Each structure stands twice: as C-alpha cells, then as structure tokens.
Image 1 (cartoon, rainbow, N blue to C red):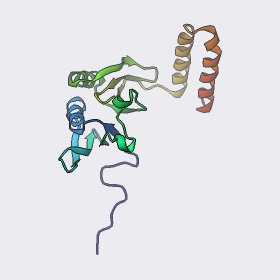
Image 2: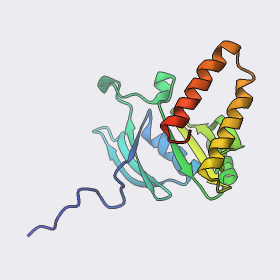
Image 3: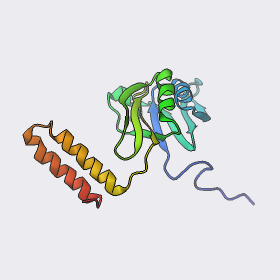
Image 4: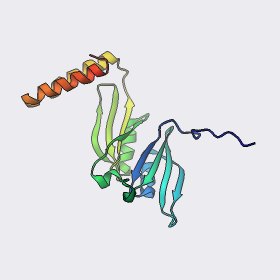
Length: 182
C-alpha cells in the first residue's frame, strides 16, 4: 500500500511566490549572496541550462522560472517594469541592506523609518524584481498608524497642485473607509 501524498509539499505554504528571471544561475548567485538563499532544487533543459529552481530565504520558499517569451512569460527587466515585490522581514535591516547592495542590488526606495513601525526600503535586483526589506522597530496601534498616515498625507498634500488635493483626499478617505479605519 502506498503512503498518502500530501497535497502541499513539505516546507511549502499555501501561497508560494514565483519569480521570472532572465538567467536562473545568475539569479541564484545573487539571491545567495544578497539574501542568504539556500538552493533547494534546480531543473535543467536538454542543454543543461537551468529552467526552474526553488530557493529558501529564511523560512520561505520562492520558485524561479526562466523567462520564456514564447509563452508570454517575461522578467520585469525585459518589460521595463515590475508588477510586485517580495517583502522580507529580517533581524537587522541595515546589515541585510548593506549585504544586498554589496551583492549588486540597486536602491529603488532608500531605507527609512515608516509610520507603521518598520524600518524599510526597496531594492531592485538585476532582473528588475523588487525586494522590500524591513525590520520591525516599533509596535504601533492601528489608531496610531491611521493618525500618522493621515498626518503624513497632509504634509504631502501641501505640496500638491490645488486641483489634485480634492482627488487625493477623496482617495485617502476611501482607503481609510474601506479598511474600516474611518
């Protein structure tokens, strides 16, 4: 009698990020140097070029697929835009940030202390993938986050042209109302 197969492989969660990259081996080298990624698997084509890999960063598994334009599957660098980002919580964001920069990451949004209690920033890798790195530096209540967000928006709104302030205020109020924070 065969052993029951788990529908979710060991180590995986329900949702697994899958990144499209131009060159899997180059991406692997970067992710290992920048984020301490552990290689879990690497599949190759007939010519021994990598077409798929899985890595583990911290306790999270991320899949990598090689770009396949014939299937409409492109890396962000090929499109000139990224549609999302991977968010990594790390013990020491400043040290992790420096390590990623040393490995070749480019700064997309510099590190800053965010109103929601994280020290965070966004880096771009050579494939155009965006990586948000953060460490929690302060526990902030939902009410305080809302207050800080609104205060920050008011400061930003002061520099907007008058015709944009009404649209931006309506959009901010809609977001707060939709999230039950109004």
